[in-house]
Image (cartoon, rainbow, N blue to C red; front, side, top):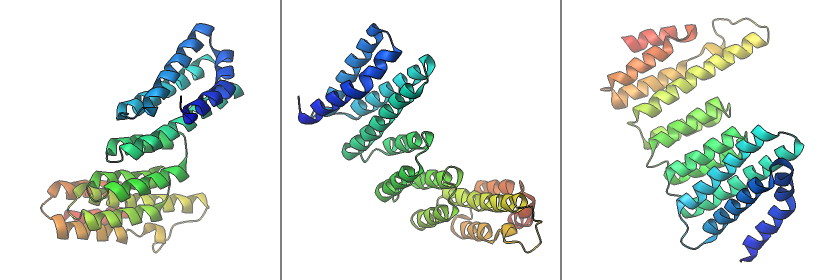
Length: 252
């Protein structure tokens, strides 16, 4: 057994095993320990496969679900956190060997979002875009969605779709995501005004959809034959009162 494997086994015996014993019957604990050791050995072998990592991750997540159903006290939460930390290490290890696999990157990002780790999400997105951005407009689309919906970072979303459109200037999906991003930003700004107790005025910056208009005009210039894109933009703009004038312009 390697030093790394022995260290992990010692850590498991000292930290996780006592908690497992407090939650499950002996036979169930025995099964979990056996499976855990089997998965650990597979990810340590030289001819490791992607499935060795993903199966181990799935196993740990299934144990977490089981723990939540059986018992959810401070010890159980500690065990779940141990497993989540191990899952992060497994994703990172897997990506050292299979960094070409875009699905592995997106699964890792989804996991980090689920467990509310925004700083790491941002770092992983940056790394994934660096490796795959030039060949995948879908990754840019995905990244913009995350920045807006999860990280609430409009400035970063703009940086991402701007970089993406420089590389994928004929991507209808990326143009539409950038367009929606700007409408969403206006919606968020308007909500902030309402929450502050103030009233909107005609020249309020929250009502400015000039960036969305620029995106539309750029799309017309680069992919004017894609009528489906402009129909989507029109429908999106009609959803908000502040962008009705823009929707009329798109309809022309």
